[in-house]
Amino acid sequence: MTAGDAKVTVHVELAGGTELLLAPPHQKKHTFQLPRTNQHGRQTDVADLIQHIRKNLVVEREELFVDGNTVRPGILVLINNGDWELEGEGDYVLQDGDEIVFISTLHGG
Image (tube, rainbow, N blue to C red; front, side, top):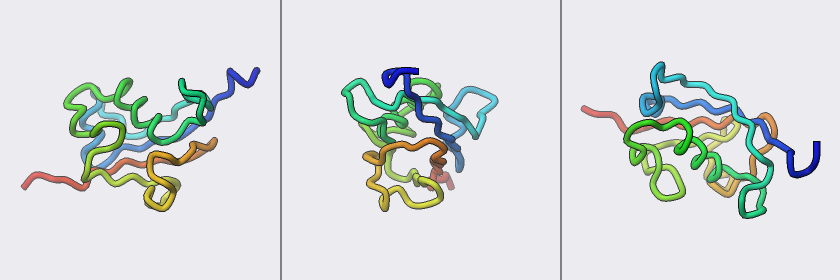
């Protein structure tokens, strides 16, 4: 494998309703292998993962998941069970085996 072929494997879980934006059967857990570097030559980060999910998993109402290049307000993001704000949010560089969880905190009433 050459450096250009290098991948990073991450485990993603969508919960709290975010999984309902995906095609049935609304699978909650996914494993992705992403390039270690993005199209801009930088290491792949959580912002790249968010765009990958938007483009490849979200089938309806993507505005309920993304807001520009990040998640919309009301979606809690955990990186390895810690708040992503402590890890630099979308700038966190993905590492092999990372667990990223997206949880909607918005619920109808």
